[in-house]
Image (cartoon, rainbow, N blue to C red; front, side, top):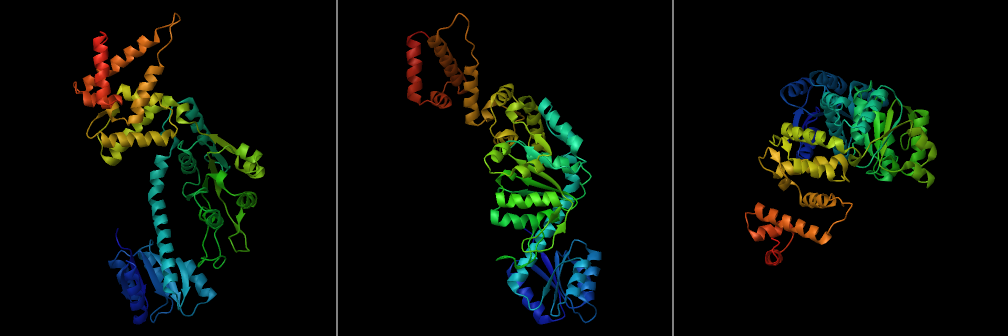
Amino acid sequence: MTEKKILLVDDEADIRSMLARFLNDKHFSVVEASTCSEAIEAVQKNLISLAIIDLIMPDTNGIDILKKILKINSNIIGIIVTGFATINSAVEAMKAGAFDYLPKPFNLEEMLITINKALEYQNLKGENVYLKEQLRTKYKFENFIGSSDLMLKVFKTIETIANTSSTVLIFGDSGTGKELVAKAIHYNSNRKDKYLVPVNCGAIPEDLLESELFGHIKGSFTGAINTRIGRFEYAHGGTIFLDEIGDMSLNLQVKLLRVLQEKEITPVGGTNAIKIDVRVIAATNQDLEKAVAEKKFREDLYYRLNVIPIHLPTLRERKSDIPLLVNHFLEKMRKEKGTVAQSVSDEVMSTLLEYEWPGNVRELENLMERMVIFSGKKERLSSEDLPEKFRKSSVSSSIHKVALPSEGLDLNNLLDDIENDLIRQALDKTHGIKEKAAKLLGLNRTTLVQKIKKKSAMGKF
């Protein structure tokens, strides 16, 4: 990983030297400047990620230096430091584009926390800029994979609601593509130039989720070293995606309800409400109506969220889409990983259509990737490339397909015939090597040899 390059702009050599040693120890690359002209030259010659600038400089002030630096490279993150902190200068620094404003003397560990947060913000900003055009194409709903009636209904709903600001609640099992739907709605809406901010409500501890959603004021709780904006404020003008909403605590549900009603948030430890314009898309794999009946989810919040419901079908409910999905995943891997597999055998496709897919589309995609990786340079995937559980499932499905004639049948003879046929197939596949054939049948070699001898003696093999 490339070291991040930090520019230190301060006319006091001792301070620059002390901070440079500290940052070098933390694996940052440091460039020093003692004047405005040196700072500008450093930005022109180096790929600077972050600049720490002293407010009071002999030839100008740090805010003017920051402005000049940002004209050269607007991606640089600026932090202003000063021994003469005032509210006015702090406000001016923020207006000029500073990420933060720290008074001297500063604690080195506090400075490191601020730097890491600034770089994290820079990465998120860069990723959003890069991904916006990609996502606009990727999440156009005409590129969704599916032609079943159930999926066409989902596509029609997305098309109808994308340009509204109505709240959406997506229902669906894990792996059905709830986040894909949220992205399709956002990137086909008039909010597409703003952020789509995802939050997994089930993955963030309850005591941190409120701060994550609404932000916090410096000193509002232990560890709140700086004021931090929350995901709702970050999503202003865009969309927030609240995944696993059913896992949110009742206490936090009350606060979310107020946000939806009042269109404003109050940071943890704050007293002033902040007006926001955010579209809310929520998702769950739980039965929220049942949760409401059991008093585990607030009824009023449920109805606030459930303005436009979208129900995503499981893969087993739309098996006619499996061939399309298989071809899509194979093509995707050829483009992204340079693989050569282009199709699957009829036997593999039959197995995939018979399987129940508890992990839905995500499980199918993972299976295709595994098969392609272990198949080597094969252009057509065969049943030998399937994991063992799918091969067993295929055999089981074939047996279950035997229809019972109206006149009845001799079950023992039928099972004997099936066993004979499977033994012959195993021997054919292994060119008569009994040890390998036994392995394919899940038997030890001795048992297979005994079966063959017994059947041969009875004239059945």
